Amino acid sequence: MSGLVRTRDSAGSGSDLLELDEIAERCGLHPDLLRRFVDLGLIEPASGSGPERFPAEVTIRIQRAVRLRRDLGINTNGVLVVLDLLERIDLLEARLRALETSNRTR
Image 1 (tube, helix red, strand yellow):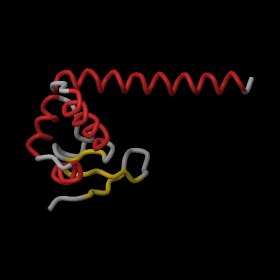
Image 2 (cartoon, helix red, strand yellow):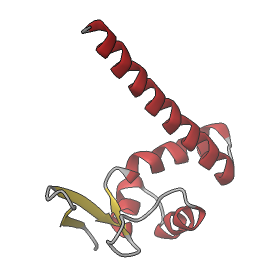
Image 3 (cartoon, helix red, strand yellow):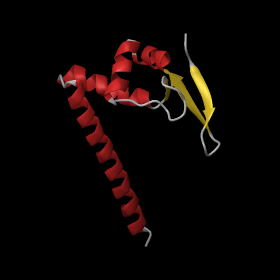
């Protein structure tokens, strides 16, 4: 069985990378489905880590994708669009909170 790989990023802090088989096991999915997700750009390997090592956080994206497909019947291409939009909304909300906090401290 594959497993957790400990690496160091450019800042020197430790980051957890998981092999594709470990992610598949954690998410309850077949590794071939995850390879399809990689081919479609739904998940991306960690840069410089090899083709099948991913940041542990991709499990969250995969679980969202599975729920969108299962619960709403959205096809994989639609899931890509929805996930990208959700991530943009999260980023914009974080920026808005930072601006609101900055304005309160003035």
